[in-house]
Length: 109
Image (cartoon, rainbow, N blue to C red; front, side, top):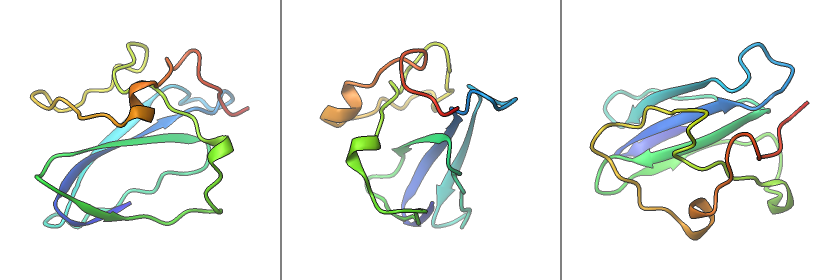
């Protein structure tokens, strides 16, 4: 992930059951100014929130988009306890509003 205009908070969650970091998350602010990038490997869930009025970002994938394999974890899941930035309330898509709990979502082996 790389932000080319604006700013966002990007989060990756390890959903690999066999991993020692299973269920842990990492978040980073990506912006045009800081020029940071974030790699989200296979076996990780990914989410973000736009912090600026608008944002444009680029990302690469390891394969073609396959909607049949897409899953959605609730942004405010209590098990993960992701520390989204304090005063930000997300505007959710219909799909994101129907996110499952971390416990109920399908995990990688």
